[in-house]
Amino acid sequence: MEGMGSQITADPPPGEGQEPPPQGGTAGEWRGELGVPERRKAILDHLRSSGEAEVSSLPALFGVSLETIRRDLRELESTHAITRTYGHVALAEAGSFETGLEFRLTNLTDEKKRIARAAVERLGGADTVFLDEGFQPLLVGRALPTDHDLTIITASLHTALEMARRPRTTVISIGGRIRPLTMATVERWATAMLRDMQPDLAIIGANGVSLDGWMTTPDPSVAEMKETALSVSSRALFVGSHTKFDSSTLCRFAHARAFERVITGTELGRPAARRLISAGARLVRA
Image (cartoon, rainbow, N blue to C red; front, side):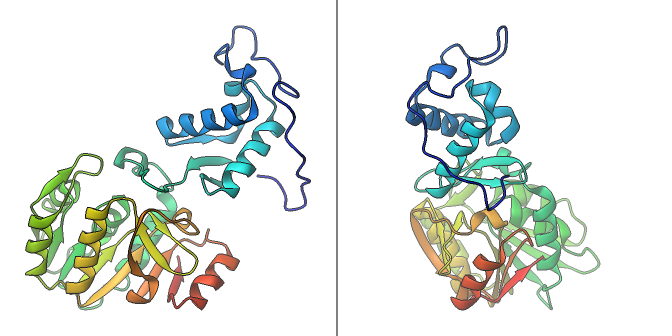
């Protein structure tokens, strides 16, 4: 990651400033011949298939210098197509694109565990907890206490199966159409079942959170599930890593003001945190 004072220069014409792939290396023969727009599209395609990458691995992969890659990443980050943290780059969830569970299981796990612990500290007297689909709510479920009886309500098959093995835990699995990407249920049957319940606490995630406080997700049926969970629950906590912020996807489902706390990691920068607080979010950085 470059310092704030780094000078940004114009992109060179296609081919200029690009080194050929090493002889006998792993980079494809075509990669060093890509122009700027084609190379940036190829970087996005690579991240779409791999989930994330180390910045230092990209020059050899694309046959260009590290500075050229950094220019590409700055431009892609400015359009919210990617996120960069500590030498890593990942594809931002935007529009209709959504990362799968396999990527979420390994991405930013340290930060997500801190967020989960902070959420459980705010469990209060809740005996029935709705856990949203996704890995971050599952981590909250893993951190819940086992010294008293709890009822877990979830649309996630992964979460239901894992929580059912916990001591002193009753699991209610919401039925409906299963989304293959996240293995969670959605649509009319699911929302109808959820409307007949009243959880003490809902743990909700999102694919994107704008800095004016709007929570979003790419799929309208998922947005409906989240809206329903919020409407029937007595309390709600938002949980999400810092990479979720300053980005938006297709469907709004709630504002940050609807949550008792918006919990993220300390990795969220102070300027973004101040804007969220100004928008009405009761922010916790764990």
